[in-house]
Image (cartoon, rainbow, N blue to C red; front, side, top):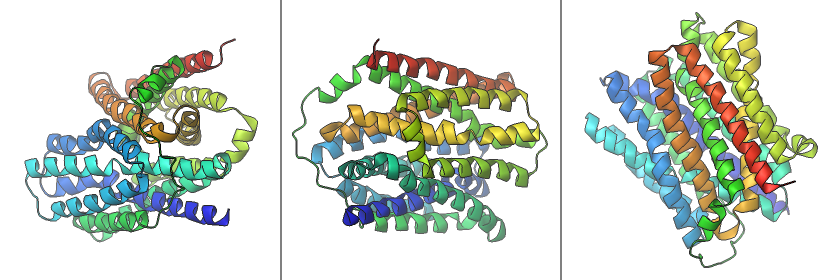
Length: 386
Protein backbone atom coordinates (compact mmCIF):
# COMPACT_ATOMS: atom_id res chain seq x y z
CA UNK A 1 0.00 0.00 0.00
CA UNK A 2 2.83 2.41 0.89
CA UNK A 3 4.52 1.70 -2.45
CA UNK A 4 1.30 2.51 -4.32
CA UNK A 5 0.92 5.78 -2.42
CA UNK A 6 4.53 6.82 -3.01
CA UNK A 7 4.19 6.10 -6.73
CA UNK A 8 0.99 8.17 -6.80
CA UNK A 9 2.88 11.18 -5.39
CA UNK A 10 4.93 11.21 -8.58
CA UNK A 11 1.73 12.01 -10.48
CA UNK A 12 1.35 15.12 -8.28
CA UNK A 13 4.87 16.17 -9.34
CA UNK A 14 3.99 15.49 -12.98
CA UNK A 15 0.83 17.63 -12.74
CA UNK A 16 2.81 20.43 -11.05
CA UNK A 17 5.42 20.71 -13.80
CA UNK A 18 3.06 20.06 -16.72
CA UNK A 19 0.51 22.68 -15.68
CA UNK A 20 3.39 24.96 -14.71
CA UNK A 21 4.56 24.68 -18.32
CA UNK A 22 1.02 25.53 -19.49
CA UNK A 23 0.99 28.45 -17.04
CA UNK A 24 3.93 29.93 -18.93
CA UNK A 25 2.79 29.08 -22.47
CA UNK A 26 -0.93 29.91 -22.32
CA UNK A 27 -0.80 33.45 -20.87
CA UNK A 28 2.63 34.63 -22.07
CA UNK A 29 3.45 33.00 -25.43
CA UNK A 30 1.25 35.52 -27.25
CA UNK A 31 3.33 38.31 -25.69
CA UNK A 32 6.49 36.64 -27.00
CA UNK A 33 5.01 36.42 -30.50
CA UNK A 34 4.06 40.10 -30.25
CA UNK A 35 7.62 41.06 -29.32
CA UNK A 36 9.12 39.29 -32.32
CA UNK A 37 6.86 41.28 -34.60
CA UNK A 38 3.70 39.33 -35.45
CA UNK A 39 0.33 41.01 -35.99
CA UNK A 40 -2.76 40.38 -33.82
CA UNK A 41 -4.30 38.14 -36.48
CA UNK A 42 -1.10 36.13 -36.84
CA UNK A 43 -0.85 35.73 -33.06
CA UNK A 44 -4.48 34.56 -32.80
CA UNK A 45 -3.85 31.97 -35.53
CA UNK A 46 -0.69 30.74 -33.81
CA UNK A 47 -2.38 30.48 -30.40
CA UNK A 48 -5.41 28.73 -31.93
CA UNK A 49 -3.17 25.68 -32.44
CA UNK A 50 -3.43 25.06 -28.68
CA UNK A 51 -7.15 24.30 -29.09
CA UNK A 52 -7.22 22.82 -32.60
CA UNK A 53 -4.71 20.09 -31.71
CA UNK A 54 -6.94 19.10 -28.79
CA UNK A 55 -9.53 18.05 -31.36
CA UNK A 56 -7.15 15.79 -33.27
CA UNK A 57 -4.48 14.60 -30.87
CA UNK A 58 -6.08 13.08 -27.76
CA UNK A 59 -8.17 10.48 -29.62
CA UNK A 60 -5.15 9.22 -31.56
CA UNK A 61 -3.01 8.95 -28.44
CA UNK A 62 -5.87 7.35 -26.52
CA UNK A 63 -6.34 4.72 -29.25
CA UNK A 64 -2.58 4.02 -29.37
CA UNK A 65 -2.45 3.74 -25.58
CA UNK A 66 -5.34 1.26 -25.39
CA UNK A 67 -3.85 -0.69 -28.31
CA UNK A 68 -0.32 -0.85 -26.84
CA UNK A 69 -1.50 -1.07 -23.22
CA UNK A 70 1.43 1.12 -22.19
CA UNK A 71 0.29 4.61 -21.17
CA UNK A 72 3.45 5.54 -19.28
CA UNK A 73 5.67 4.39 -22.14
CA UNK A 74 3.78 6.57 -24.63
CA UNK A 75 3.91 9.53 -22.24
CA UNK A 76 7.67 9.17 -21.98
CA UNK A 77 8.04 9.02 -25.75
CA UNK A 78 5.80 12.00 -26.47
CA UNK A 79 7.32 14.10 -23.67
CA UNK A 80 10.82 13.46 -25.02
CA UNK A 81 9.72 14.15 -28.58
CA UNK A 82 7.97 17.36 -27.46
CA UNK A 83 11.20 18.46 -25.81
CA UNK A 84 13.15 18.07 -29.05
CA UNK A 85 10.43 19.73 -31.14
CA UNK A 86 10.32 22.64 -28.69
CA UNK A 87 13.91 23.49 -29.62
CA UNK A 88 12.52 24.79 -32.92
CA UNK A 89 11.44 28.02 -31.22
CA UNK A 90 15.10 28.99 -30.92
CA UNK A 91 15.55 28.75 -34.70
CA UNK A 92 12.19 29.52 -36.39
CA UNK A 93 11.27 33.17 -36.85
CA UNK A 94 8.83 33.24 -39.77
CA UNK A 95 5.07 33.01 -39.31
CA UNK A 96 4.51 29.86 -41.38
CA UNK A 97 7.43 28.02 -39.77
CA UNK A 98 6.10 28.82 -36.29
CA UNK A 99 2.55 27.88 -37.33
CA UNK A 100 3.75 24.40 -38.31
CA UNK A 101 5.88 24.27 -35.15
CA UNK A 102 2.90 25.13 -32.92
CA UNK A 103 0.76 22.51 -34.61
CA UNK A 104 3.33 19.70 -34.35
CA UNK A 105 4.41 20.55 -30.79
CA UNK A 106 0.89 20.71 -29.39
CA UNK A 107 -0.28 17.69 -31.37
CA UNK A 108 2.44 15.63 -29.69
CA UNK A 109 2.10 17.12 -26.21
CA UNK A 110 -1.71 16.74 -26.31
CA UNK A 111 -1.11 13.14 -25.22
CA UNK A 112 0.11 14.12 -21.77
CA UNK A 113 -3.16 15.33 -20.23
CA UNK A 114 -5.50 12.42 -21.11
CA UNK A 115 -2.88 9.70 -20.61
CA UNK A 116 -1.68 11.27 -17.37
CA UNK A 117 -5.25 11.44 -16.06
CA UNK A 118 -6.01 7.85 -17.16
CA UNK A 119 -2.83 6.51 -15.54
CA UNK A 120 -3.58 8.40 -12.32
CA UNK A 121 -7.15 7.07 -12.18
CA UNK A 122 -5.94 3.51 -12.82
CA UNK A 123 -3.37 3.77 -10.03
CA UNK A 124 -6.00 5.09 -7.61
CA UNK A 125 -8.52 2.43 -8.59
CA UNK A 126 -6.07 -0.26 -7.51
CA UNK A 127 -6.16 1.12 -3.97
CA UNK A 128 -9.84 2.16 -4.10
CA UNK A 129 -8.79 5.71 -3.22
CA UNK A 130 -10.06 7.97 -6.02
CA UNK A 131 -12.40 10.02 -3.78
CA UNK A 132 -9.80 10.47 -1.05
CA UNK A 133 -6.63 11.01 -3.11
CA UNK A 134 -7.39 12.23 -6.64
CA UNK A 135 -8.11 15.80 -5.58
CA UNK A 136 -4.97 15.97 -3.43
CA UNK A 137 -2.87 14.85 -6.40
CA UNK A 138 -4.62 16.96 -9.03
CA UNK A 139 -4.49 20.15 -6.96
CA UNK A 140 -0.75 20.27 -7.60
CA UNK A 141 -1.53 20.98 -11.23
CA UNK A 142 -3.50 24.04 -10.14
CA UNK A 143 -0.68 25.08 -7.80
CA UNK A 144 1.84 24.65 -10.62
CA UNK A 145 -0.26 26.77 -12.98
CA UNK A 146 -0.83 29.46 -10.35
CA UNK A 147 2.86 29.56 -9.41
CA UNK A 148 3.96 29.81 -13.04
CA UNK A 149 1.54 32.65 -13.82
CA UNK A 150 2.48 34.57 -10.67
CA UNK A 151 6.26 34.10 -10.86
CA UNK A 152 6.28 34.30 -14.66
CA UNK A 153 4.58 37.69 -14.61
CA UNK A 154 7.24 39.17 -12.35
CA UNK A 155 10.07 37.34 -14.17
CA UNK A 156 9.12 38.53 -17.65
CA UNK A 157 8.54 42.08 -16.44
CA UNK A 158 11.94 42.12 -14.76
CA UNK A 159 14.11 40.04 -17.10
CA UNK A 160 12.15 40.29 -20.35
CA UNK A 161 9.68 38.23 -22.38
CA UNK A 162 12.49 37.13 -24.71
CA UNK A 163 13.50 34.60 -22.01
CA UNK A 164 10.19 32.73 -22.37
CA UNK A 165 11.59 29.94 -24.61
CA UNK A 166 14.26 29.13 -22.00
CA UNK A 167 11.79 29.12 -19.08
CA UNK A 168 9.27 26.95 -20.96
CA UNK A 169 12.00 24.56 -22.12
CA UNK A 170 13.25 24.04 -18.56
CA UNK A 171 9.73 23.25 -17.33
CA UNK A 172 9.14 20.86 -20.24
CA UNK A 173 12.45 19.19 -19.40
CA UNK A 174 11.19 18.69 -15.83
CA UNK A 175 7.97 17.18 -17.24
CA UNK A 176 9.99 14.77 -19.38
CA UNK A 177 12.23 13.70 -16.49
CA UNK A 178 9.18 13.14 -14.29
CA UNK A 179 7.53 10.82 -16.84
CA UNK A 180 10.55 8.52 -16.55
CA UNK A 181 9.83 8.22 -12.81
CA UNK A 182 6.09 7.51 -13.17
CA UNK A 183 4.74 4.05 -12.53
CA UNK A 184 1.25 2.56 -12.69
CA UNK A 185 -0.01 -0.93 -11.85
CA UNK A 186 0.14 -3.40 -14.77
CA UNK A 187 -2.81 -3.16 -17.11
CA UNK A 188 -4.94 -6.21 -17.73
CA UNK A 189 -3.91 -7.40 -21.19
CA UNK A 190 -7.00 -7.46 -23.36
CA UNK A 191 -7.30 -7.47 -27.11
CA UNK A 192 -9.24 -4.49 -28.40
CA UNK A 193 -12.69 -5.53 -29.53
CA UNK A 194 -14.07 -3.94 -32.67
CA UNK A 195 -16.91 -1.55 -31.85
CA UNK A 196 -16.31 -1.74 -28.09
CA UNK A 197 -15.84 2.01 -27.65
CA UNK A 198 -18.67 2.80 -30.07
CA UNK A 199 -21.09 0.68 -28.06
CA UNK A 200 -20.32 2.71 -24.94
CA UNK A 201 -20.56 6.08 -26.68
CA UNK A 202 -23.95 5.19 -28.19
CA UNK A 203 -25.49 4.85 -24.74
CA UNK A 204 -27.87 7.83 -24.29
CA UNK A 205 -26.54 8.67 -20.82
CA UNK A 206 -22.98 8.85 -22.19
CA UNK A 207 -23.94 11.03 -25.16
CA UNK A 208 -25.86 13.45 -22.94
CA UNK A 209 -22.91 13.54 -20.52
CA UNK A 210 -20.46 14.49 -23.27
CA UNK A 211 -22.92 17.11 -24.45
CA UNK A 212 -22.83 18.65 -20.99
CA UNK A 213 -19.03 18.77 -20.93
CA UNK A 214 -19.05 20.53 -24.30
CA UNK A 215 -21.30 23.28 -22.96
CA UNK A 216 -19.31 23.74 -19.74
CA UNK A 217 -16.02 24.36 -21.54
CA UNK A 218 -17.85 26.38 -24.22
CA UNK A 219 -19.05 28.60 -21.37
CA UNK A 220 -15.56 29.02 -19.93
CA UNK A 221 -14.04 30.12 -23.25
CA UNK A 222 -15.23 33.70 -22.71
CA UNK A 223 -13.59 33.63 -19.28
CA UNK A 224 -10.22 32.41 -20.51
CA UNK A 225 -10.12 34.66 -23.58
CA UNK A 226 -11.80 37.91 -22.49
CA UNK A 227 -12.10 38.07 -18.69
CA UNK A 228 -8.92 40.10 -18.13
CA UNK A 229 -9.76 42.48 -20.98
CA UNK A 230 -13.32 42.83 -19.63
CA UNK A 231 -12.05 43.76 -16.15
CA UNK A 232 -9.59 46.22 -17.66
CA UNK A 233 -12.40 47.93 -19.59
CA UNK A 234 -14.35 48.19 -16.33
CA UNK A 235 -11.43 50.15 -14.88
CA UNK A 236 -9.76 47.52 -12.72
CA UNK A 237 -5.95 47.68 -12.50
CA UNK A 238 -3.57 44.84 -13.37
CA UNK A 239 -2.96 43.95 -9.71
CA UNK A 240 -6.70 43.69 -9.06
CA UNK A 241 -7.16 41.59 -12.20
CA UNK A 242 -4.38 39.30 -10.95
CA UNK A 243 -6.18 39.07 -7.58
CA UNK A 244 -9.38 37.90 -9.29
CA UNK A 245 -7.50 35.14 -11.12
CA UNK A 246 -5.61 34.09 -7.98
CA UNK A 247 -8.88 33.82 -6.03
CA UNK A 248 -10.32 31.49 -8.67
CA UNK A 249 -7.29 29.19 -8.75
CA UNK A 250 -7.04 29.19 -4.94
CA UNK A 251 -10.69 28.13 -4.75
CA UNK A 252 -10.12 25.15 -7.04
CA UNK A 253 -7.07 24.10 -4.99
CA UNK A 254 -9.15 24.14 -1.79
CA UNK A 255 -11.89 22.09 -3.45
CA UNK A 256 -9.45 19.47 -4.68
CA UNK A 257 -8.01 19.15 -1.16
CA UNK A 258 -11.42 18.63 0.49
CA UNK A 259 -12.91 16.60 -2.36
CA UNK A 260 -13.38 13.47 -0.22
CA UNK A 261 -15.78 15.27 2.14
CA UNK A 262 -17.88 16.48 -0.79
CA UNK A 263 -18.25 12.94 -2.17
CA UNK A 264 -19.37 11.77 1.26
CA UNK A 265 -22.32 14.17 1.11
CA UNK A 266 -23.30 14.34 -2.58
CA UNK A 267 -23.49 11.86 -5.44
CA UNK A 268 -21.49 12.50 -8.61
CA UNK A 269 -24.64 13.37 -10.56
CA UNK A 270 -25.75 15.92 -7.95
CA UNK A 271 -22.29 17.52 -7.94
CA UNK A 272 -22.39 17.87 -11.73
CA UNK A 273 -25.85 19.44 -11.70
CA UNK A 274 -24.78 21.94 -9.04
CA UNK A 275 -21.72 22.97 -11.08
CA UNK A 276 -23.95 24.11 -13.95
CA UNK A 277 -26.22 26.06 -11.59
CA UNK A 278 -23.16 27.79 -10.13
CA UNK A 279 -21.88 28.44 -13.66
CA UNK A 280 -25.10 30.12 -14.77
CA UNK A 281 -25.09 32.36 -11.68
CA UNK A 282 -21.38 33.13 -12.09
CA UNK A 283 -21.58 34.29 -15.69
CA UNK A 284 -24.77 36.33 -15.23
CA UNK A 285 -23.13 38.20 -12.34
CA UNK A 286 -20.00 38.82 -14.43
CA UNK A 287 -22.16 40.12 -17.27
CA UNK A 288 -24.50 42.44 -15.41
CA UNK A 289 -23.19 43.09 -11.86
CA UNK A 290 -19.60 44.31 -12.38
CA UNK A 291 -19.05 45.72 -8.86
CA UNK A 292 -15.95 44.54 -6.98
CA UNK A 293 -17.46 42.31 -4.28
CA UNK A 294 -19.95 40.39 -6.45
CA UNK A 295 -17.20 39.70 -9.00
CA UNK A 296 -14.83 38.59 -6.25
CA UNK A 297 -17.40 36.26 -4.68
CA UNK A 298 -18.35 34.55 -7.94
CA UNK A 299 -14.66 33.90 -8.63
CA UNK A 300 -14.92 31.48 -5.71
CA UNK A 301 -17.44 29.58 -7.86
CA UNK A 302 -14.46 28.42 -9.95
CA UNK A 303 -14.15 25.70 -7.31
CA UNK A 304 -17.42 24.35 -8.66
CA UNK A 305 -17.43 25.23 -12.33
CA UNK A 306 -13.92 23.89 -12.93
CA UNK A 307 -12.58 21.76 -10.05
CA UNK A 308 -15.80 20.00 -9.02
CA UNK A 309 -16.96 19.60 -12.62
CA UNK A 310 -13.63 18.16 -13.78
CA UNK A 311 -13.25 15.77 -10.84
CA UNK A 312 -16.85 14.53 -11.00
CA UNK A 313 -16.58 14.06 -14.78
CA UNK A 314 -13.44 11.93 -14.36
CA UNK A 315 -15.17 9.93 -11.62
CA UNK A 316 -18.32 9.36 -13.67
CA UNK A 317 -16.37 8.14 -16.69
CA UNK A 318 -14.85 5.36 -14.55
CA UNK A 319 -18.25 3.68 -14.60
CA UNK A 320 -18.32 3.60 -18.42
CA UNK A 321 -14.71 3.48 -19.64
CA UNK A 322 -12.63 0.77 -18.04
CA UNK A 323 -9.71 -1.44 -19.02
CA UNK A 324 -9.03 -1.28 -22.74
CA UNK A 325 -11.31 1.73 -23.27
CA UNK A 326 -10.13 3.89 -20.38
CA UNK A 327 -7.52 5.97 -22.20
CA UNK A 328 -9.75 6.51 -25.24
CA UNK A 329 -12.62 7.56 -22.98
CA UNK A 330 -10.40 10.12 -21.29
CA UNK A 331 -9.15 11.28 -24.69
CA UNK A 332 -12.73 11.62 -25.96
CA UNK A 333 -13.50 13.83 -22.97
CA UNK A 334 -10.54 16.09 -23.83
CA UNK A 335 -11.52 16.21 -27.50
CA UNK A 336 -15.22 17.02 -27.03
CA UNK A 337 -14.91 19.34 -24.04
CA UNK A 338 -11.63 21.18 -24.50
CA UNK A 339 -11.12 20.62 -28.22
CA UNK A 340 -14.55 21.29 -29.72
CA UNK A 341 -16.05 23.12 -26.74
CA UNK A 342 -13.04 25.37 -26.22
CA UNK A 343 -12.51 26.13 -29.91
CA UNK A 344 -16.15 26.76 -30.86
CA UNK A 345 -16.78 28.64 -27.62
CA UNK A 346 -13.82 30.92 -28.29
CA UNK A 347 -15.05 31.68 -31.82
CA UNK A 348 -18.59 32.51 -30.63
CA UNK A 349 -17.24 34.57 -27.71
CA UNK A 350 -15.16 36.68 -30.10
CA UNK A 351 -18.07 37.14 -32.48
CA UNK A 352 -20.48 38.20 -29.71
CA UNK A 353 -17.82 40.47 -28.16
CA UNK A 354 -17.29 42.33 -31.43
CA UNK A 355 -20.92 42.37 -32.57
CA UNK A 356 -22.91 42.92 -29.37
CA UNK A 357 -20.50 43.76 -26.52
CA UNK A 358 -18.81 42.17 -23.49
CA UNK A 359 -21.99 41.78 -21.41
CA UNK A 360 -23.63 39.56 -24.01
CA UNK A 361 -20.44 37.47 -24.32
CA UNK A 362 -20.71 36.40 -20.69
CA UNK A 363 -24.50 36.12 -20.94
CA UNK A 364 -23.91 33.57 -23.70
CA UNK A 365 -21.76 31.61 -21.22
CA UNK A 366 -24.64 31.65 -18.74
CA UNK A 367 -26.98 30.28 -21.43
CA UNK A 368 -24.41 27.56 -22.23
CA UNK A 369 -24.45 26.50 -18.55
CA UNK A 370 -28.25 26.19 -18.68
CA UNK A 371 -27.94 23.98 -21.78
CA UNK A 372 -25.27 21.95 -20.00
CA UNK A 373 -27.58 21.48 -17.01
CA UNK A 374 -30.32 20.16 -19.27
CA UNK A 375 -27.83 17.71 -20.82
CA UNK A 376 -26.51 16.35 -17.51
CA UNK A 377 -30.07 16.07 -16.16
CA UNK A 378 -30.97 13.97 -19.24
CA UNK A 379 -27.87 11.84 -18.66
CA UNK A 380 -28.93 11.12 -15.07
CA UNK A 381 -32.49 10.39 -16.18
CA UNK A 382 -31.30 7.87 -18.79
CA UNK A 383 -28.80 6.24 -16.42
CA UNK A 384 -31.27 5.97 -13.51
CA UNK A 385 -34.78 5.76 -14.99
CA UNK A 386 -37.69 5.90 -12.54
